[in-house]
Structure formats: structure tokens, C-alpha cells
Length: 180
Image (cartoon, rainbow, N blue to C red; front, top):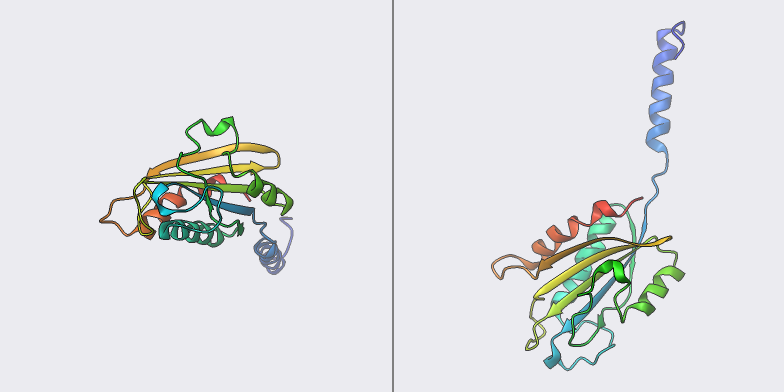
């Protein structure tokens, strides 16, 4: 500011600049969430089927959507997918997108998503609808240009801990990797 300005004009200019900076629109990333169940062969869910076979899958999906929404991002999702008995994603995440989720990735791209967040939930072979996943892999991929960003692996959580609290704690570790 000009040192020859009157104090009133300086205060007005400072207030105007502060108001302009605070009212500038903040842009949010468009995040597409995909949840895939693996394992749990005795549930009767056919491979490639849509819809949650496990209650925990819906819980993880809800926590993912909620956490990214609360962080100020625009979120959307695909139906929960059943990928069969083998846990995909054992290969390094940089090797490519998890097999079986290509259609969901195409949906994310056609919808203009900036990021895809993939949750791979591995369930025990002998399990029922109330089983918790034994293994959770959360991955973030940037879609334009396409690149792997980050993976967090975690156990399904101790039985003594509230599963939603565990999921939220793990998911919070991903939020800094999705940029506005």
C-alpha cells in the first residue's frame, strides 16, 4: 500500500482485500469411490455381482463418501462389487488398476472425476454377512493424467474397536493425497 494513504483508506483497502480473498471460490476435487469385496466364498455372492454381500462393505463405503465430502470434495460412487475369492491388488498398485474394476473406472472417467478411490476389502473364506474384512487396501488414483497416487493397507480392525471409528481413522490418512 502507498505510504501516503490516509489511515482510513488503508483500513478500507485492507478490509476489501481480506473480504475478496475470503469470498474467492474454493474448488473441490471430484472423487469417485469404488468398493470391491473379495473372499467370502461361502456367502453365495457370484463373482462380478453388484451390491454389498457384507454389512462392513456398506459401512466402509459410507465412511469413504462421508470423509471426502466433509473434506470439501464432490463425491460419487459405483455399486459395491464382488470380485470373487482371490484378493486382487497383491501386485504393486503402480502396475495398473485392479482387475475387475475397469467398468467402474470408465464410469469415473466419463463422469469427469479427478480421482478414483478404490477400497479392496478382503473377507475370510468362511464368513457371513456380519463378518469384518481381514484385509483392507485403500488406493487413490489421479485420473487426468492417470497415475497411482497412494495406497494404505490396514487390517480390518480389532473386534474391540468400533468398526466405523477404525474405518474413519484409516480413511483420514488418504484425504491429504486428493488435491483440490
